[in-house]
Image (cartoon, rainbow, N blue to C red; front, side, top):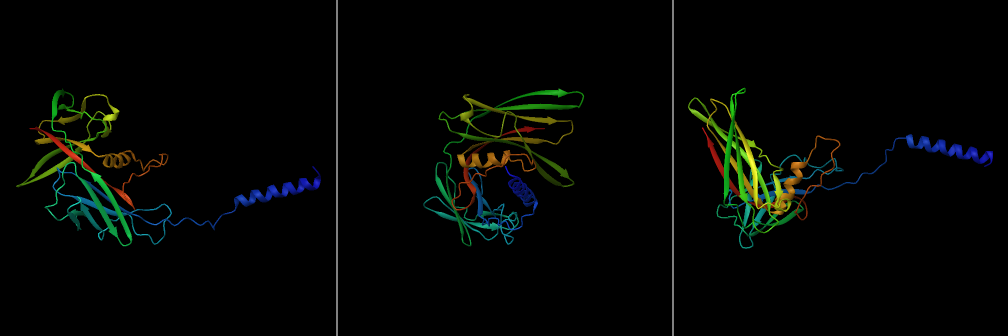
Length: 286
């Protein structure tokens, strides 16, 4: 290589190096429009039908985008079973929507359509309520006394029989309910209890066992107020399962966590419309 070409090559390298160090200010980011996000989960075992409405928060959004963290009070939401349609009413205290028509009932095995609209945004989703509900849950309990800490530990094991056909989705939860008397008043508190034995959401495809089990631990010390432990067993549809599975595994505080793809079955937007059957078994402690 001649001296002239070497000098030219050297100058090109110097130019490329300093060009990489310059600040780029003319990058045009994509302007992604906010989407309407509605969530609603229905069950024949609940007294009310509720829904929430928000706007999504795009990663590259307009500075004029609405606050996505605030519930929307002005969405139009309706639910239909193919014959009858009911509209949701906004509750400014609970910041959600509810079906005002008490005559509109959710029935097992039926398919429902949810439609939401706000301005020029419309979303729509369909779900079918699971036909079967777990009717027979057995309870077995053992206890042990901790002399050092002076409390009794109860282990409550719940067992139910899986449905014969595969492809069933379950969720297990627990809650502790107790009352505290303050003067002449009594205040009732509810605490979440997380059953042992695995992830709260699971499918029978993950197990070959005919009988499925979960365990709740209850610790009681002398003088504790009477309480009730409820075991909640949900037989869900696939939409409920996939949507909640994402949120239960989401770790927003971990900068090294893998990005989570939010599940949605809403055409035209985000959110989820799902269904479940609910079974509850309670145990009193005094």
